[in-house]
Length: 337
Ligand code: KG4
Image (cartoon, rainbow, N blue to C red; front, side, top):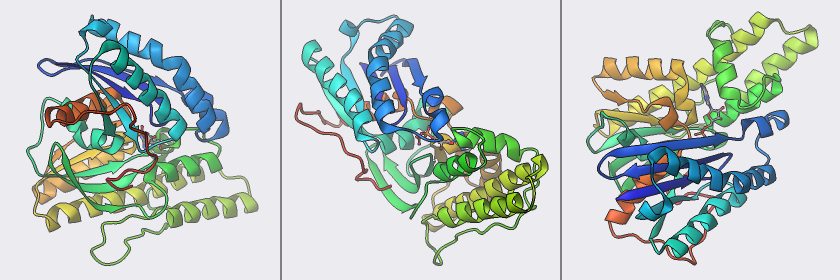
């Protein structure tokens, strides 16, 4: 089967072609970072307008990379939610039109399910069940994944997502958008123990997260430095390193606790923040020390992409699911934040 996967939940227009036998034939992403950079965050109206301009060229590009045409498609899988409604509607309406005109089925896919299954785009895959930490700009959640279609939420953020906290710190420090990559490269030059920032462990045994206190503490620290004098480059790097380490300490520890509590020995990472090299390294070290096996998707499969949506959609289709032309998109995931 040839599946076209479409993802427009936030600020990336993505399309991929998945062959159920041969794997991913094309995976194309058009980033809107340059558009949103000067606002320090995503402007929803601009995001949906850009999706409208990009969707047809991006789908055509994915087909041409795969050496196929629309006539070769058997199924379209599209992100149905969660995300920005205006952005989601572009991909969803486009998909319904394709499905109608080509006379082929479509399925609506939860964006989170895409991240939870993105590890299956890799050559080395885990067996079920596994623990998944999904950590991105909109989500920080732990799931138990029982099979291709069953996911139980074990914990999630009660306020900011980790990536959102990275982005907000970067915005305060005028480091640009998205904040994660620049904060993490600054962190490489800084001292992780320079500033004593809080870690929100929450109630004993809780697998929930909270990053708003950490974000405020880091911003207050910078504010005090700036009030006294100009912040030096080293102080900026130290702030980034101490902040990043506080995030990593909590997400790594809670992931290990989830795996131990549920006696599951396979762990996967997903979402944009899992591109963070210190997080990848520290998670790998802790999993190794605990005897757990860590599966890390390649960087292009960690961030938003159409291939993970195509894969998740194919599983739903094989289980008998079909999209209906009066289906609607949603902003909040039924799977949890
Ligand atoms: O999954 P993703 O591509 O999409 C959304 O959630 O929209 O994740 C984007 C998030 C942003 O918050 C970005 O700052 C963060 O992932 N991010 C990182 C890194 N690369 C991207 N955070 C920390 N370290 C990184 N290297």
